Image (tube, rainbow, N blue to C red; front, top):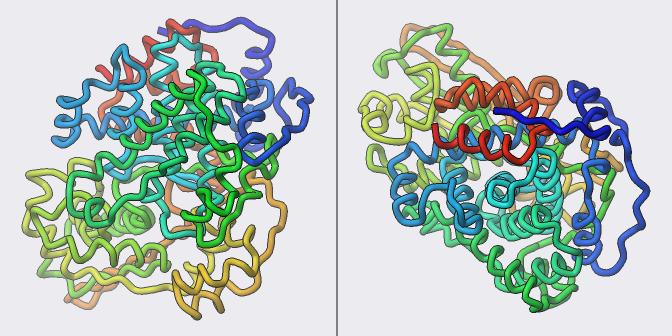
Length: 524
């Protein structure tokens, strides 16, 4: 299935491919002129000319894992009844029209919250989906695909980070995908920088703002990435035809950040281009649902191994201690989650249901979000015994890590205080304390969305497990074994061993090999 390139560059990449943590330049890093102009213009000039030589091998290797991980998420979406409805409306994700395929791939990979995240944003829904669609249609080789993914990551993460201290975050920050889709497509098409500038300006001219009622209570969640990706495709077509966008749209007083950011951070759009790789902040989602359920599910898995399947009548209470971030999301979903028949948009944000399910079965999978599993009475009986509590230390560690918004708070410094107060009150302001930039380059980034789960049984026994960084989240363990983790994720959703094992050679595949690999990954 795999055809490989025989260039000196790829030979150099192959020699370093197994070195995931060494922080040094790409093997043939080029000297590039400094970009100039507005933040959008600088970002466009840098990304349009990004070459594999410019990217450290450890970052390309992360991108390869990201591709396989997101394909696993897409496969999961394909198998769900709502995913099949989406396909009946818009077609299979492997199709000849790359613009339509990009939207379908984005939607299928996003709505079960099995998509990968970074500082900042749920990137992969666009930054993998769109390059994948265009690599397949435009017959790109594997190295070109990975470079387009990295370019899209860097653009989407930076533009999202600039508005992270605002009212929208996580999956509700759907403007992430305006940036990711524009960058992913235009890098695959090798478009010149002026086209990028105009496409970004046009895509962000009327940015999407989701309504929480629709997001949580209906099937509209399926469109949280589909719609901005489609908007971005139109913006690219318009820019290629000669239409112009406003180059100062990000920072202008009537522009994007003025509306979407409580604390605008325009400088992060261009900070450390070619040095600070946001791709290195990737967290790989090992369980559906979130944000914040991952560590709790990891803990529940360990408790199940000790206690075995629990009967609801044997449990006095289950306490989940977590950061404000987890409590915030859980509170928004709780009013919509009422047992069997709860809307999926809210259920994927719920904490009690996945924790109860994992304590009963030992695992939590996408099938647990659909009938007949979601209708099982004992799951809901056990979920009623779950109680969430705030853990101050976990909130402190959350803000010390880069993702999901600790780095944005450091970038803002004292200006972040009103946003912190709005998010968690004076207690959070005091807890975070004085913050300032420290010049970190993301090579040791973390995402500390921890949890402590305690099960108290009626017979007096108590079992507790705690995890600060979830399995797959940014941190030392993930940097060391992300390739292994995403292979496990892909195999768990029915993917083939051949596809899983060959992702390590994706950077050496010729165009024909990439097409065959994509077909095998999504159509078996």
